[in-house]
Image 1 (cartoon, rainbow, N blue to C red):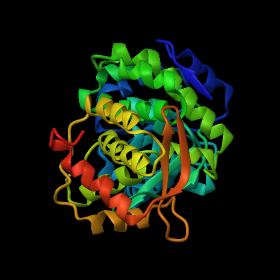
Image 2 (image 1 turned 60 degrees about the vertical axis):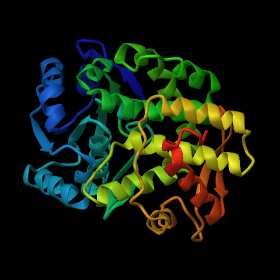
Image 3 (image 1 turned 135 degrees about the horizontal axis):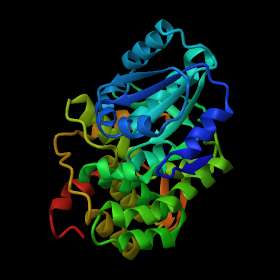
Image 4 (image 1 turned 180 degrees about the horizontal axis):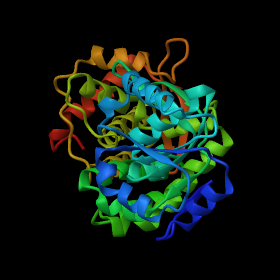
Length: 351
């Protein structure tokens, strides 16, 4: 269940009072500790004891070492099965906090209070928890729903522009795979700021939630949410492994461009549709220099993508704006062509 919080967080307080939790643990990173935790604590009404668990920010922290540290802290603080974990943060916090909670003592309850656009409209919704393994994204995790998701849109005012833009990529994806009107509303936003984006967050959340409700464990239609993520995750992983992490939305934007081009080369969409999609993504997302990445390095990550079966790379590709096919397999030549297409996007004569 997703609840939009009012300014005094009364819905959260009603939730806490309606349950019999033994103790509360609030997971934050350094940024949400500074900017968001004071707002939560200033409005949270409970007699329960609580502890703050803080990790450093960044995707590079989403690993088994951090998870182990959090398990050890929960153990040292005698967290029992009636404890509640509140994940206050972006996608790393909700992914990590959900994973730690869903595995500690075989599962304790947790709620998500997302603080970034990416987490509000995508990462915190759907019951996917996880950590990265080596440089493979979200390779270890569980399907576990949070007890509740509480959204406080004013947290977006604390975000730098790059974080806002990162989350906007997932919103564009939602429109492309499921709702043409949503896509058209988003591409007509001239200035990417909180005021312009907030009216459209609800639609993105509804799209994500609707797809998840149809296919919780990603057997069929939920795979469409992976559009832009197959090649995007590979590039994101390579950047992470080289010590030069990029934001998830930047990788997804790059992935949507390459996978839109794949949709064209596979005959799923006409050239005009391909051009419209790519040009509207390029309006907000700068070119990522992938010239140092070899095709073989990218393919190694693509082959090991957790969505694959029988060593075949499965793509979700656009069949028209607002519609997406899944489990689509392309030749290695076509995939390499789409990556080369992106490499040449700095050339104004490409499109």
